[in-house]
Image 1 (cartoon, rainbow, N blue to C red):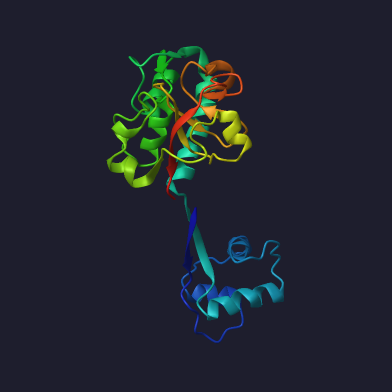
Image 2 (cartoon, helix red, strand yellow):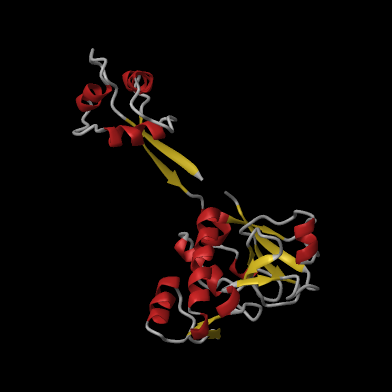
Length: 244
């Protein structure tokens, strides 16, 4: 996550009033409510309009360092995890309409949600939520899935640009329980098991994985699955980890 700050134009006048100074740099109505927001952005959390607080704001405005706005930009991993969290709540809500199938699995979450809201059944497989989240995070997921314990067939283009492929190291060969216990996984890790065509994502919460497949109980747990109960003996063969 990164922050991009925008600053007010530097005030070069002689007034000692923060209201007059803000008007001079283009603020049409610098009301107390407006100044409270400005104060918060600039580190004053309990603004009441005291002389000391107004002087602090004015001093910043005179040096061109009074923050006007802060835009938060999330990195791909944060976007990806945020999307999966969003999908989980919707899938849990409409769980009775969802079944394991690739034939009627929609290519995007937006299309799946629209279908569910109309009361139509919708298919999911293990990799479906992962593909949706990649697409919504700005990555092309076409043809993406872990085939026979490897992502190598789809490790290209956008996937290769944003994720690093882990095929060796301490995490490989571990069960999910052991990998979590030894703190070898990072939230958002995309994982596949040895000798399996399966794809799932580590949530960052204990051994809970985002999985749209057989391990998911859609009406009860959405797309979250406890891997101490499912696939507890399966071993990790490959991981795709976010670079940013």
